Image 1 (cartoon, one colour):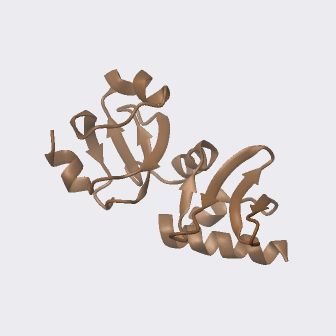
Image 2 (tube, rainbow, N blue to C red):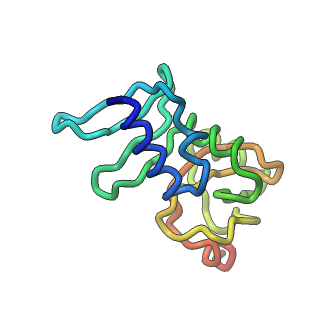
Length: 141
């Protein structure tokens, strides 16, 4: 049964993030936490949360471990929102990214996509949900 669940998770991840993301995110053996109704909620590798499967959308919300895996798997600029180096510390402390801090972005990002937040050196700072499309991020101040 668990092998089937991993296959399903991988297919969903490939759909959401791109080909190969499923294998990059989910090892053959994961710890899966289910909701009280029996639905998949969170996926862990040991004690590290890889992702949460959102019940309302059927899409993943990445944990920092999942973001690390996708950052290592996909080449720049895939899935990335690049912010000025000068705001790196604020982002690492949990701050929000504002359009005025964005210097580059994967042009395929749409509003509501899960994204990787990196600095100008492509160092992973965090993960989040885009509120704007790529074009809007670069346009707005």
